[in-house]
Image (cartoon, rainbow, N blue to C red):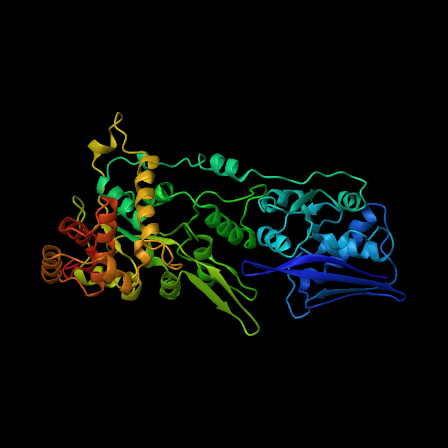
Amino acid sequence: MLVKTYSSACQGIIATTVGVEVNVSPGTKYYIVGLPDNAVRESLQRVESAIVSIGLRMPRQKIVVNMFPADLRKEGSTYDLSIAIAILAASGQINPTHLEEFLILGELSLDSSLQHVRGVLPTALQAKEDGFKGIILPKSNAPEAAIVSGLNVYGASNLKEVIALLEGEENIKPTTVDIQLEFARQLQTSDMDFSDVQGQENIKRALEIAAAGGHNVMLIGPPGAGKTMLAKRLPTILPPLTLEESLETTKIHSVAGRLPAGTPILTSRPFQAPHHTISNIALVGGGTYPQPGEISLAHHGVLFLDELPEFARNVLEVMRQPLESRSISISRAKFSVEYPASFMLIASMNPCPCGYYNHPEKACLCSPQMVQRYLSKVSGPLMDRIDLHVEVTPVPFKDLSRTNSRSEQSSVIRERVTKTRIIQENRFSGQPDIYSNAQMSASWMRKVCQLDEDSRHLLKSAMERLGLSARAYDRILKVARTLADMEACDNIQPQHIAEAIQYRSLDRADWAS
């Protein structure tokens, strides 16, 4: 008897419906075809044990499992449940009438319990698009799939519950999720706030500018100055995720298996901080069967690279293209996948090998040549993609010891940032690839970054006097446009140019001399 069930395969963050055909006929041995990997081939052993554990029988006949489309690689243990149901239906042990109404996925344990699987959100979205009545999956995955409206989501704990549901013997209610409630609940979960940071008002100002315009930032200063503490609080002042951004971010984390069990949707902007020993594949994504890397996991959030010069040079260089295109394409001989990677880069570094160059109190032991050699570990093309260079100095004891003063809370700063982002959204409406000032092309800069005579003269004299490189010109204009937006000014004023120039420390010809 031939029976069909349906499951799903993910390529990148796009799901494809996979049909599972099972034919039970006279003979011996089990066969599974359709380009399965080792985890799929091993599923028959898990399926057999699960079926026997609930008092049913595994047919001692020839069983052929075909997974189509046959040219699509099938990976992982997601197909266990679909294969088990198809075998039971093909052998006449359960009724196959309603099987084509559901998309079925889940990993089976030997005792028939269902284990958590990855890639559920893109699968649920595709199931709705393909017209399935509902989706049956492990109970721990049900909240994630339930954020897709118009699709019945049934979470089951074991194989026996799934059989009872398909035969109408058990009334399992569909899982529902209130997305607005989830957003409200998770927005209050952050335990970090800018008000925790004593002093460093100029650094907070720079990070507010970066958040308001989506600019990449370099924090450079001695050890213990607070670079990491400040960087970790940057997501708390970014505008809240929209529903569309949240869904896209959740899909990436779901495919990567990084979505916590029971979490239906990510409502906080991600913050990824990989160690400097990371490989280039782990950073940008890839592998034999490509998975998203840290830059994609930071999509719509922040990627923090601490101790930037300690990263391998080839690791840093592979980020250059994603920083511009805001996506990463991974190609293999037979297929290619594309992951989104629109993130804010915040990097930190010491100014020299000993860490105390330009320190107000401690003497630096490094020669100018050593400082230059240390800084040159980060290439010019990568520095070209960082808009703000911010020097961080240690906080004086008198500021650290204040117990009765608290600076602005993140929520207050976030309100200002959000207002500035709204101005940019209105400006770039209808432009699908531009959402903030940092993403402006040269043509857009000519439109919205026009300077009056005073501003032009100030910028020209500053570049000549400070020895700023040509690559600093565009960055200064973009940051100045953000500063103007923060004050709701239609045109860039000289004071905006003056402040933007201050954030190009590393471009100055005499910085490390």
